[in-house]
Image (cartoon, rainbow, N blue to C red):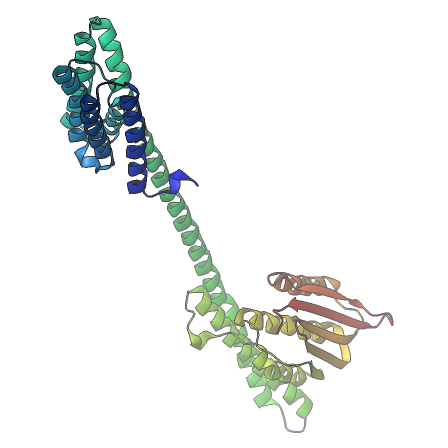
Length: 377
């Protein structure tokens, strides 16, 4: 049992009990006449029991402890060992818990009691001073040191907590400022250009002569994609500004049909296959899976041929696997491919996902697979 973890009240009673046992044992071992032994034992047990009292009574406890040896010496005219342990603890309590006049008064009473007993018993002044220093001054000083050390440690903990709080505040401020700068750049530059793309694509579509449906559909797809990009950018702006309301919820697996329609409108056939029993996933993972599939489709649109792309969602008892498969086109931008795969791998890594990508054995089919662990259902 760790005594330090005991409540303070229990610890004070434990100290008082040990003092009562030790001091009472010495009284009984002195083998004085029974009436004297009983009286001294009762006084000793009474003043030692006072050691379990509250700290504010430490002066009175010290006074009672100091009185016992003097009473025994004056009334009974002998030197029965009474409350030596109690005197030590009383001195410690006075030094640890009292301040100012009460603390020094307690020290004076204890020292005077010990010196008086020594002198009456025939010891010299020097011996009496040494006994007082050992039995009263030393415990008193240890109590003062313990309290000062505890106050010093508390001050260090307070400073450490304040420093940690200031550091967190500085980091939060820096993050807020950085997010504000990113939000301004998005609003002033990116949103402006995306808006211009939307306006010009709409103007071009309206200005086309009739009879060219393929080009009209392509321009309409540009408008749709640019409007979707505007919505996503505004969602990001809201998040950067700390707005996490339901109105700015990011798209997830429920929005895959809209995502695939946008790819088809751009001229690339896109197919979705779902295998296994569909199940709910955490919202953060739901958004991440959507963004990974969006990146897979973007890579297929940029670097694949016209045969299209197939996206597969496979639900297992303890995992979710996403795979995309498309035929690699000619003259692909390898740097752009690497950046896209790095983005997929980074998103997957936040949820302990494993990513595999590369050409199949035929040398033409590009396959990207991401597997996320899930709690078994």
